[in-house]
Image 1 (cartoon, rainbow, N blue to C red):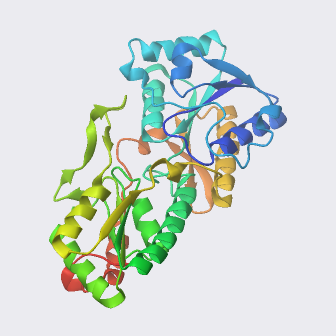
Image 2: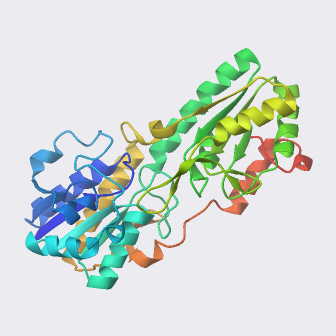
Image 3: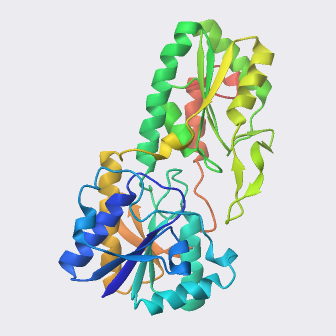
Length: 350
């Protein structure tokens, strides 16, 4: 069988582990020919394709990023894009395509399967951990570790200078990284997109924390809002209609300094969260996903996505994974509030 793989959306630790597993499973177990479409969906639109061999998997198990590149290209926003994808799959005699990505990439895959019965299998990928129908996506554990390490480091400098430090992390619509990273790093306040916050209540909680410890560390997701006001870098949108978020950390730091008179600084981890070597967990999860994806190809279970359910790798309908994001469990977030100080303040300190 001739099969191909593409990686779409933002790069993510563990992508190369998926590619490596696909190559080993396809070539060694099934004697397939494997190809890589370059730059996500831009590959099959523009016929950017390359053969992949076992030698291409050499030494990539501990590398971040993706050896077949990525982009946020959307075929359904490109003139004739969907038909070009189908035509180029046929041109290259590709019998199955493994699409690795988040809601956008898998959303395109679902449309192509629905509209053209395209032979596609999806692998879930996003550091935000906000994709439905799977317990966890690879890349999230690595991002979480990086955030935890950053919060650990901020505690020492905040304590040394009696400062309030604000760390802005990724999380457009879901605050999994902020919540779990904040808990792991013992942040004094966590702010997420799922719950708009009252700056006055945050300021009161920080005053209490300063009185107790002399300093405070806050973790805030990029999509968090002041009373439903989204903080944007600009009005420019990507191919999937997403505006560029950013700047909420700086805005929060300035507002807190004005309301408390405490020296407050902000910093953003940005793309550091998605770079570098994947954790052991993400290497294993990416590998298991890749192995399962090739098995699904040979079972001809197209329109399916590999999924982690408990400790098992299973498959689900792609449509169950897209359309609605998996947001932070309200019960989980409310449990963390016990760390955020006086419940009368209604918000947080971890």
